[in-house]
Length: 129
Length: 493
Picture 1 (cartoon, rainbow over the protein chains, first blue to last red):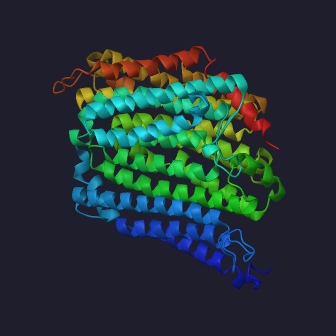
Picture 2 (spheres, one colour; picture 1 turned 90 degrees about the vertical axis):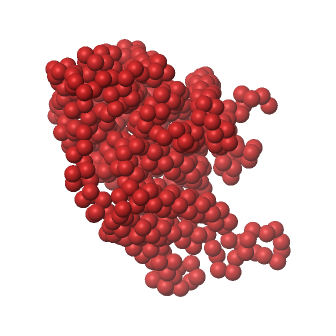
Picture 3 (cartoon, chains in turn yellow, green; picture 1 turned 30 degrees about the horizontal axis):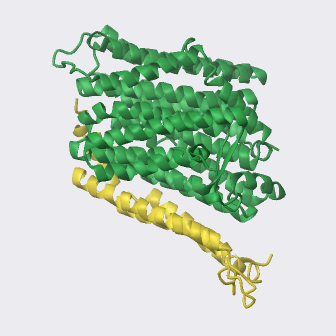
């Protein structure tokens, strides 16, 4: 099967392979790392992969923005770009909120390592009341 | 054009505009009034829309007068109007209650921001329910989720911060899965309008990207609705959030996630594709049963009442998914009815716990010794709502169990009937833990209950009345649910 640019197999689907790699790598970081900041970095990579998933198929090589003119015949689809603009804003807001929470967690616990926080909670502190 | 034609837009725009207004006002009292006014207006609009839908069928509202499927459409049908009434209704009960509750749980300088976040969360949930556009669902989902994270982090315990962070991670993974699903569907169908997507998907039924979209969507939404075993974020979030927040999100957020699932399963993918090509029924049945038993059993061993009832929520979500797994009109009716009944019941329970926290400073089992004597009305309320969780006749919970049992019998699955009854016994065990401590132990000498303002008691009583009312008279819950179930199955190919 040929890819979008007429390239065979793997090469033609290059963008999809990158997308899936970023997706899995990001998700892995979120799950495997105990550092709260690193988790957010993983989350960011994970979300970024989705931007690619949307934008890559919307782009035609040699295509322009949809301008009504005889000079242009091939158009890229603008909708995925617009959607992802929204998704990027959402991603930035999530990251900002996540970092703000990490700052507060660090103030409250003095650490940003998940294991240490867990240790503090299962320790004498949780026996309150 | 009169105002009436713009009601669908106003439904979302009103709370959305009220939110920044509360920031500008800054004074907690004024912010409170704005928030309550906005939520009551939203409820009025939701009710008006519900009557309109009941009278004259589906309302389609093109945003900015751009006709769908190119433009964004707000679409109100039997199911979405029911969700609008639930969200706006719970918000208009919880907000008046919240004032007294947050005074004791949140530092005063943050009060006005609480109302802002609450309104934004409500906007998001209303938006998800009303929109007919797939990407819009994601945007509104994130509006409601982001504000929920903030609301949870406002809790006075430092564990609230960790709970909010965990929910942020899980929630964002879930939301991103949903965007992936929407992206794949958009690639395959070339449209974002849900109704249009549902029509065009017939041409690509069963292709791998569509099935991948189905899988991503199912996992993503299951994270949001806390389907067992993806519920890890929920108990901490409910337990450490300010109680008014627990009451609102327990009653609405997971229910709206179920709505998203129903909307995509029956409106876009189509019943045949969801239940025909993948063993969805069996998977949902297994997870629902696991949730009903495991989560409810964990609930029995909790020492904090907020946590106990949070685990009970995971169990109750099992019932909703169980109804869905039958893939029949009766099963769907049970699910949709339980969205209402459980929303009202859990809302009432967390509000009652809010009163307990405000009065005696905490809701751990060791603190509520002898609560039946200290606060007879509140304890009786918790027991009443607990009976509804168990499904005792005369309460809202019974109606759901009744339809679930009917749906199981329809398919001749006797063993399921026994399991449903058995799971009620597990619910009885965790409700009994409260009863035992509250009624058969001596009150602690060091705890003197403080008076609770009437602004907290009255809204709670309203929800408790609803719990009994929906158990006795099912016109307001079952009839819309049957209409919604018929609409969902009728739209299936």
